[in-house]
Length: 320
Ligand SMILES: NC(=O)c1ccc[n+]([C@@H]2O[C@H](COP(=O)([O-])OP(=O)(O)OC[C@H]3O[C@@H](n4cnc5c(N)ncnc54)[C@H](O)[C@@H]3O)[C@@H](O)[C@H]2O)c1
Image (cartoon, rainbow, N blue to C red):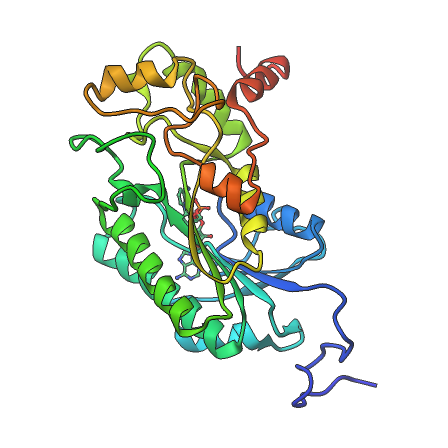
């Protein structure tokens, strides 16, 4: 018998109880796209990907539903968080990644509007649909990165460090965190985690890392030589889909900087006079954006190391 459009189920979706929780990932066609989708599938989630751009042939992951969505249109977001025709009905969690993520990639006002309005729409549509688990992609940049010309007050950065956005992009990320704080206050059952990702690296990007060694000024990002492997970013997203109630902020980076030079020497060279207190037991190349809170609260532990990845690329003949 053909399915029909009723109050109980969307057109075409079989009215069977779901065996798996369902998560929607917004904007998952970027660097975090495949790792996040795979990580969540492997950990028992059913995944729906929402983006204004549908994936090309070859970008699709088997078993994932893809739905086109313009996030600046609240009606579309609210509707999509409830059901989409024959695709699905109901979501248990949302991972919001959609954004214009590069400083200067669009007019600042457009970037700010696109990113903050999308985040507001996600928070409000989540509230209206009764979804209780939400992960938002925030950014290390709201700590005042790039650091030139204003050096940090102290290192390593932590979640408690001063928030000092220096661009429309990072200001938008700060506004996203402020909104999340209030939505969590309005609904004590809501779990919302803002993950302040560092520079996200796809595995092939490690080919560039050797070119920065020897001169700490050669690394172009001005973010204390920080990065995170996209697969570790995906791990953090999965762990953040926990049941922690309230709004929680986490810095998410790799466990080391992207330099061979010890972190204390990097700080002495580029930020003389800035107080630096390394975390005991985390090695001399430890990240200068502390991930101790993510380790402690979420159980996050980066699995990928750039030096091993460079070695792999050498063995595969991809770099000399
Ligand atoms: N790339 C990084 O190094 C980095 C670092 C820190 C934080 N982040 C954050 O992580 C998230 C993902 O970053 P990325 O580099 O994978 O981004 P990306 O540009 O590669 O992908 C973002 C996706 O969002 C979609 N999108 C943007 N605006 C939309 C809208 N209005 N409606 C529907 N879709 C829309 C785009 O089509 C794109 O597929 C972003 O929120 C970004 O700000 C990224």
